[in-house]
Image (cartoon, rainbow over all chains, first blue to last red; front, side, top):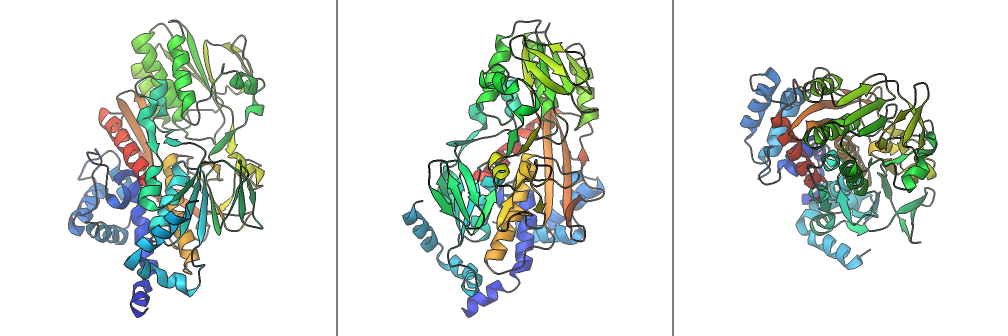
Length: 91
Length: 425
């Protein structure tokens, strides 16, 4: 039970990031795992640094895109970093 | 309800169940039951994500009358003849197999909010701790004189929920002689999927261009202008279908004559066509109406946007097209998928004795085909504004395509495959 208690501490923050990541899942698949062969890439297992850099490039417009330049602007630096850590942990 | 399967699912949780179990041990019912009504984009997502977010600690029962999931997004391709209904059909079995959702193939017909019980068409009833209602829309046939009879006779179809009517409308177009007229009438906004009628008109025009070039598409819109992606649709129509497609605004249909296939409008002159697609106004799904949950103009259900709980009845969460949406929030499958995740997180938090996420977010993308191989999109990101208790588009984010493209047509199909998997697989 002690072990369980530790897991519950901080779970509201964890739940928030999990919900944030779930907004990506509609296009990129549950937990960032896209359907095999999808034209939309998986996010699961990307490194945190790579994810954050790509999102920044989309926001700046240095990486051209149809949709992501518009979506990336909806997330703060802090949220983008949280998402990067979340997807990096999905292997 | 297969109890053996439920017990097995709980036992199979093992160590993971311990981690999640603490909160449950503290206050929540040992095995809370969430009942979900409707297996569309909202309901199926809610069923899956309550199981995911609770690490399978909360039982989920999904009530859905259809044997299989059939997508409305992409169904205009079926009407235009470049996709089959089978391409848009997926099994519900993975919700049971992969996520331990109990699926009851029946229709919910009544809700007793005081006793927390859902009544089913075949006479059973199911008790819930939390109810998720995702009943889609109901069509207001009585708003257009003669439409209910024409629909029942199969003469004038709507095809507004995908499935068999999409195939039926495709057959009517295939049977129409070259030189005929297809007329689509669009109700006043808000209605399900704002760009869909314009996409449909475009895809029918593409079919005519390739197969019946002397025919014509008439778009008769009750609104003062194209409701979604207006500039993109108008450019596509001018580029691709200049002689084929005619758009008329301020055409509000009030009556149909199924014998002569004639439309009457509130102000404009009558219009006759060879194939009619008459879309009446829509409102919340029937089970929500009957339960008295549609408290906004007797059409839409008002919810608390931080949890999607009904403003009328406690412990009933309502998703998707049935809700009174926040400003700038379209009635789309993608939005319903997002509503479901916010609701699922809030339900799991409450049943486990925790506070709901104070800052839920939503995203939306609506792809629309301008022709079989070209598409464009509208996208947005929404954040919960706690003071105003609503969702607002994040300033500076979102927008529409710079131009339609073949690339976005491929993306639209990838989106569909991924979101279908997100709600079912």
